[in-house]
Length: 497
Image (cartoon, rainbow, N blue to C red; front, side):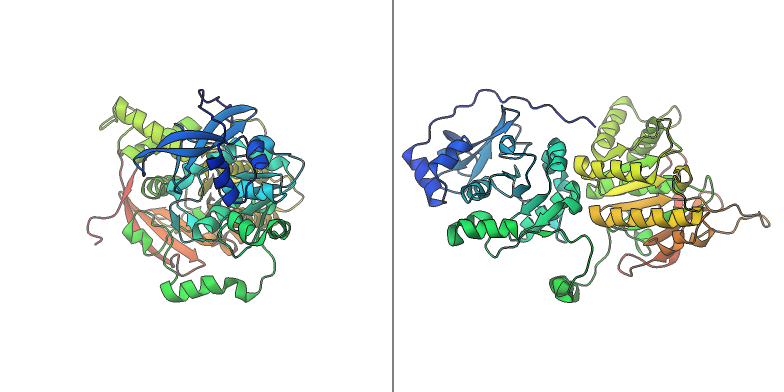
């Protein structure tokens, strides 16, 4: 996973700050010395919303001594513009000391205010808070805005810990959640202040209040003891709006018994060639197409190129290889570009067998790099047990760790596991469930949701939910999908509705 090298920006007109510029900065509590430290400059830029050129302050973005981007704030109104390509790094990145805790704020003015208040190791995100927030979280369509996390991932891992001091509004809280999800919540601390943002806190209460907010930041609430009052706002929202549902699978009949919620674990089982892996692939394609979700795939039984070809078939509903209704070259190229945008592969082409540690470590990197919201591990029996645990103990411990990962990183995990061998009885094999999976009862006990994909006569495939921990996500039940031979897609029976 190679990070992009910093590309120097073409020459930028960087004028000296005038009394007008310095006067504006002074009104926000920022001294000329701090402006010089961050190399602020004067410029005249065209602002689309103002439909005119205006005097502005330039905020330069540096990486490894190279000017990589610049943003501009109009003096007469709170309007911003930036150079072509946009900033892909933290503002203030080149001033960071990796041996000290790092403070992340929402805007350049907040970073300047924190620095002015005596907080030296501070950076700002380049694009502010996300525009689209759903249920208190950043919408998947905003994922591309967070490339700066991956670009500075080595630095974020090197500092002792990170304090997130985003704005005190819903967008700021969603920004904090997404930053912590990508960086790792165990490394993050959160500030709490009444004012809208750090710059307002600085102006209203001074340097000491800013330092107290930073020093008083509390560890991110991954787990522990909490007073019920901590959840009152969330409970009041549930009381008013109800729990709602998880994200749609793309099938109305499946949604009646199963939807997809972040931070949960779904165990999928079924006999070989029943279509369970293909069904999970179809869910990923539906979620990527409809919701913009991104995924990491750990697939032991398929080479990445084979798996990618299958995803392109599900995306185009056409064959990748020779045959009837094959995609043409332009359709193939479009599908490959789409797969590149939404999927990462945790390939297993090394000699050493995969461990659950290596899978989850790489998945955590995929959260930072692409902002994945889904992880597929398929199937279980390729994961090596290097502990002294029995198989039953190992599976229980492994699923506990997977659950913890899902909750900490806001990722839905699909774990595919084969049932134990069952002697054939008559013509049909009995439909397996969580109790039938080889190795441990933990498959049933620790799953949030459990699904069996069971092939019936002809092209009918039965989707059976045998466990659903939360009623708002789904319920026990079964429904039928029709398997399409051409591209391996699934569809609802025509007479279902």
